[in-house]
Length: 250
Ligand SMILES: [Zn+2]
Image (cartoon, rainbow, N blue to C red; front, side):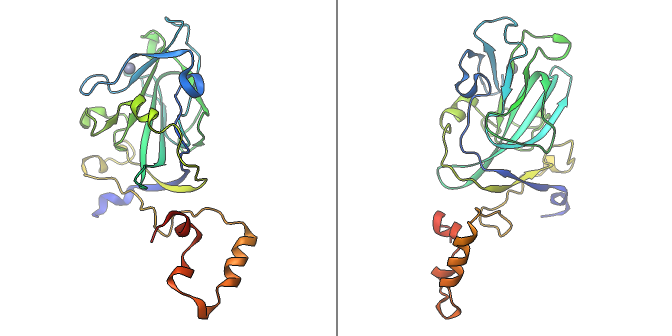
């Protein structure tokens, strides 16, 4: 990769164990989507309280999954307070993927960039946008493309860039519990990395990179593994890590 890749960085985040709804935790009880996702049109969903009007103003908004906060700012311009959280999760095919969840028009933001959050963690409250220009609602997006940030104008307004939020959530409500950390790319937005926006791909860590954090092994188990493996007995099978045995990575 040429120099543009250098300014991208990584952090660690807990792998998601599933995805919840962003309001009425965990199943959106008391809320409904009054405006859905449409390519080239509305690139997210507008969630509103069943009470209508501004009855949901100030209601809590929750992180849909474990992740790390990559944006938290009053962006104004029709957006107001925005929080974006980056999530790592394992797809059915075994690959680790990443998505950004965006929470817009917030009245209050309660998380800051770089902060680790867990599924269901309070991240802010439902608001009315800048200058109270809307009836209170949550504008909620899920992005596949980690470069978008606040520059939706630069990326295709299609399923190439976005998930239909409820479709994504419904199919990933519960994921296999893997209490482990994974490397997550950060500084992928235009603002933090001006060169990156026109390049084709994000550097995504491979699951088997040596820097990947392995699941913690209790100390006594580590000792037993070492005792059983004398130098004479070392075979490819014996040298496989616990992680590789569990997940079949070669
Ligand atoms: Zn909206």
